[in-house]
Image (cartoon, rainbow, N blue to C red):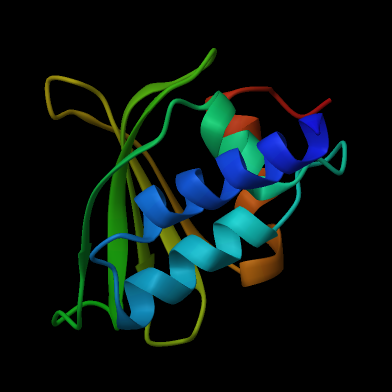
Length: 127
């Protein structure tokens, strides 16, 4: 019974994260959720531990194919995370604190590195 409750909770969380997203932003959210961290935790669990709140998904800009903005409240980082799909099919991650100061920009991130890299910046530092 507990397994069914956990599955139902996961479905609700996924639905909440995906609500209103389409195109690149939806794919990006799925890649983070279904990715894994360095200790092989599922990306959805990582997103939940970060206290993720999706702010917006957006389409093509002059600098990218589109992306996703969300806020987190992690152990190492609290603020806004912006992930853009660059024209070279890699991701650019921008970490911004509450007062709008850009703390870090990480370029050329491949999709299979995305969840682990985010987890290392937000919740746990890579060893």
